[in-house]
Length: 500
Image (cartoon, rainbow, N blue to C red; front, side, top):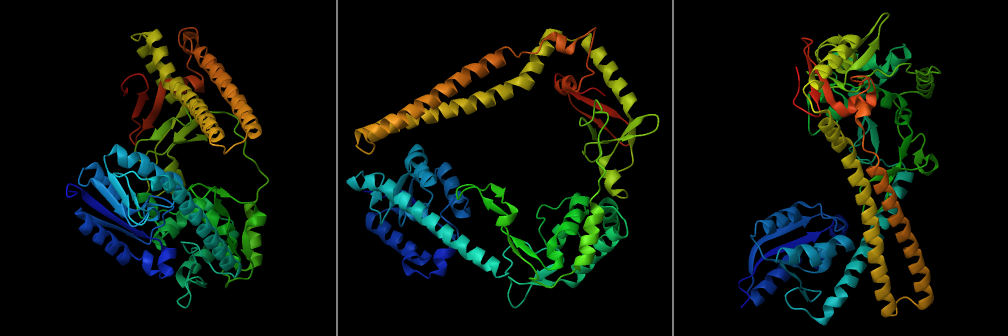
């Protein structure tokens, strides 16, 4: 009797597969095949988990996540798919679920058309990894075809981005064609005119915010997690608009690409690899004004900081949590709220604090605290806070490389025994792996020696009583200093509770 098994029926179809209108891969067909199988085997169906329009290249799918949650809550003890490709087409991820996650959670996995049942081992089980590889190859092939098709459309001047550039909208005739948005384009024209008149990006942003003009993220309904700052124009947004060639009718796409099919991380391509189509759509700004405005933005003056303020980067506004700026006056320097300095009215408040006075407050407070603190214990805590995390990160990274190389050596020996690798190739690869292993083992020993001898001494913190007038030491003692609009200073130490 197999009635003890309560099954989660998982069905999936990607967008590209649904466009093919292939009856065999349809959601209805998958459900029918699995339902008939369960009736025949006496397996109880708990629920259907359907991901319609989701790729098998990753497992970031809503119904699959719900399935995993039900497994963890022990609501099901069996997972059934039509075949392995429905579970996933990523070779590594699919294997992880079939051979690790499901067994670890006592889940019976059945792929009907692949004749795979984890409860009943058969000779066909050895073929499953190869089918997973073929599914992965299929995914790569589909990805290349889709990418090639997208690039062809880009070269024809179609806009394939997810968010339309501010100032434009999608054409009702063809959503891939850009048309001018009357309202947003008028704001773009104002931005260019204000810049041409000599206004800075900060002043332009401040004026637009004051007039309650919706910034691009709100206007395009792009900011899903709206905050108070979402409605504020930022100087960086104004600068981006001023530099964007889309406003003179030039469409630039394919600036980034994924580092690999399995990764979400993207890299910036070289400019000659971009797909750039001039005179592609109706411009909002003429080239003369665009070139003039951008020539004004290029300044030969380079600001060089003459003095690195001791507490800069540690002082925060208590009201808006932003890091406070340092402004140099004739006779002194002051910390002031960065948010207010940028946006002015209705955004935070104008409060400031003299740099010299703040330094003295910190020095005197620390001196007072040191009278009642075990200095050796303080040094030990500071060491743990600043070096331990770095040491573990470096050593874990090296250990991971060593484990990976050791696993590769084991697999190489297996391949040699099975005749996959001949003797000459084995010697070359094995020598290379041994060389890499030797290097990382030496590196591990070297790094352990560095960390062992890099313990900070009391002299680093104390010199002639208390020497904290180094930014490096300040970073080890305090996490932050906050100042509110009543000029109340709060110092948060790393080694004890905060002092007010």
